[in-house]
Image 1 (cartoon, helix red, strand yellow):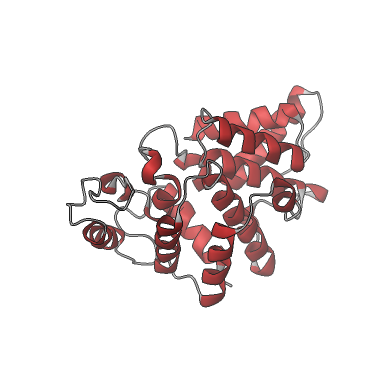
Image 2 (cartoon, one colour):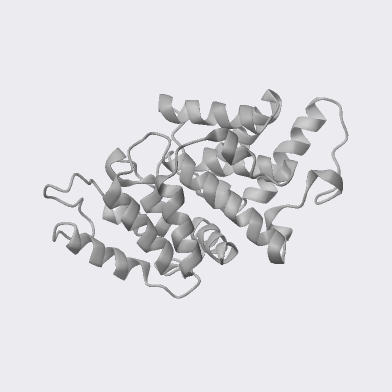
Length: 247
């Protein structure tokens, strides 16, 4: 699979480095124009009419690409608002590590240098198979968080898979994404994928970044995930603070 390539592009989209094109040269605006026509013939700046049940804000999606499809749709979210915390996605590893250090300092402990000991490396520092594994963990966390309110239907799942493909997903990753979009939501199973304490922190922070904490179902998912990841309350609070500050 090439999960690390896809995650890096999503992080770059979140960081605003790609404009209407992502780093792989894919014309996101053009693709979404086409999606708009397929979904009802309207202009890209309008929600699609018709009986398909979707309420895609195409103008908002232009800035979000695949992430826009993950967190937009009929929930009516605006990607420029509070629902999507771009900065937290773009710098997930650094912010997760900073949250841990801050929580340690508040308890009088001495934080370790970045990337040291049993805490694990930040995703930005990983290479090879370790980077690939962490990327899968974070992509899985994002997809599960996006599904936490139960409102991604079959057509939206297809659109998300298509957008991931447009970023350059290989066949194996395509099948994996489709499985994640249909698999039961299981915080314990997701938490078992974390390969280090730093991975657990990143998985939680990136989940916060794509979730609406005011939605009871999504808030419940975060609480389940924090418990499954065995994160201390002080660390959870700091991770959520970092996500909001970076958003």
